[in-house]
Image (cartoon, rainbow, N blue to C red; front, side, top):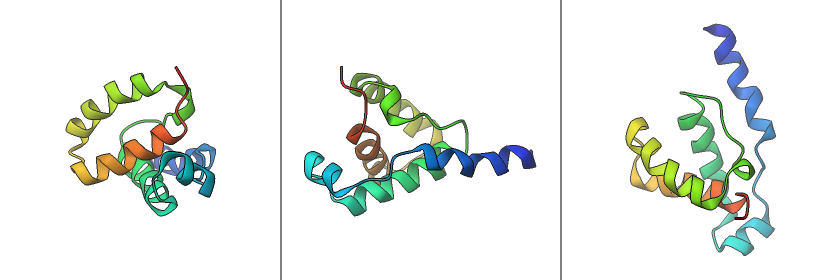
Length: 93
């Protein structure tokens, strides 16, 4: 179990770090995108391996996120921040 806990933080550097360009393009503040990243790591990474946002399309994320929100008991506010983070760099359809 300890090995799994030690590996989780190692996954997070592969996730993009939001930039000002991301904020301008998505019309979401860089601070909100950064908080979404942190919530994604903490909430989602606590149950399973993290998926890089760019590995899935917007449609795939839109289908998966509500299901995971319910399973993980994530608040609507936190879910919105996570959604903004993953959609800012998701794969284009």
